[in-house]
Length: 241
Image (tube, rainbow, N blue to C red):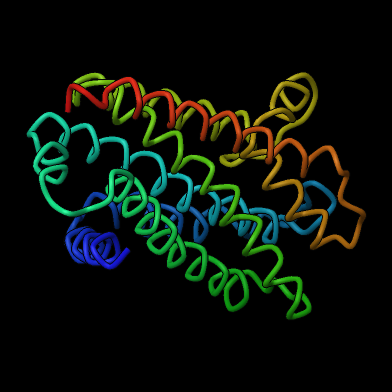
């Protein structure tokens, strides 16, 4: 376990110098929130500034969990870094666990920063427990994609990972109501996505309405699906990396 934590610390220190990470997980959600948040209308039963706070926090955390991880894992696999690690005393699953730990840690700043913007700029007001619950929902909803990043990174080479993650990112962002609130037929389609479920659970908490059990179950199902894909990808490439 000590080796895994040391590797996670190394990964975290390296990620801090990654400008692309800060652009998409921190800068982009902040800029969009400053531009769009004050629409003077409502979405999903709450003030638009509250909805967009949740959406942008989800965007930043979701991007950090999926895009950065998948590309780095694929590149490191191609360069033979994973194979080199297997020659060390590091546990067999230590590399994957380290990546997940780093993802869990590095998605938190984007959530906190957007929440601070929501409070001081957007005028969002909630009870202390609601801030905590909404933050946890957004965080856990995004962590689902950390497992998908492992599956993609292990399965595909770097030149294929970028378009694949871009397609998945924009697809789940649009259908999840992250860029804009959904309505009509598009909302019916988006309701089955984990991004929509995370946003809708959060807005239900903010709006003081009961959270449908189906939304919570949906997040758990997506977690099982992506975790299963990650396990299959790692096992399938175990002898080739």
